[in-house]
Image (cartoon, rainbow, N blue to C red):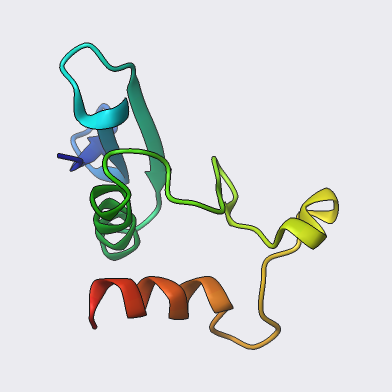
Length: 96
C-alpha cells in the first residue's frame, strides 16, 4: 500500500510530501516515489496508486502529472479551465 511521507529540511520544516510504494505491491518490487508540494495532492495521488494496484496510475507522467497523450510532446496538461480534466478523473475515482 502506498504511503504519504513528509519531507523535512535541516531545520525540521516540512518542505514537500512524497508518495512511496513498491511497484506491484510486492516486497521485492522496486521503490517508486513521486513528490508533491502539498499533502492534499499527495493524498489524492496515493489513492490513485492504490486503485491502480500499486502501479503508476494510467496516464500519469512522473514529475508532470496526468498528461493528454495527444499533447504529451508539448507537455500540456488536459483541460483549459482552472480544474484540469485529470482532477475530475481523480475525484470520480476517489468518490469525492
